[in-house]
Length: 123
Image (cartoon, rainbow, N blue to C red; front, side):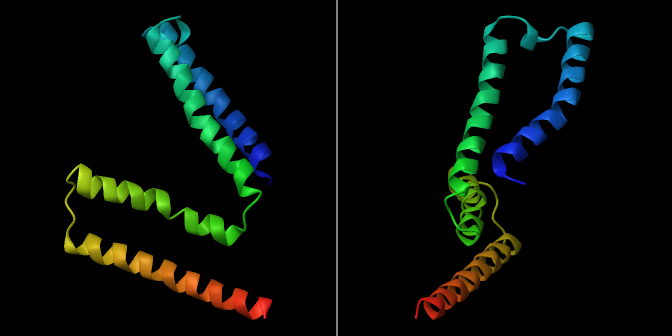
């Protein structure tokens, strides 16, 4: 399935449960989402802030090879990991270190194989 229609389908699949939840919250607890307030505006903004990068990524993904996208998918968790360890002082034990090294070793092997294959094809 193409990226943009896929995002549309995912959005519509979650639309019904989201509306049911919003109605439940409004009836029994009062929902800041359905009232014009800063909380409601921030909730709407959070939706836009979440969906725009997904749309931009889907548009950019059309221009890239799948192998490039696969490698890029390792960056976000690795950046989150580095932030967690160095900025937020999360514990980084030996098991985590070994796991991280093995994951990036696998990525390196994959990249080396992809480069070797591309050189063969272009030669």
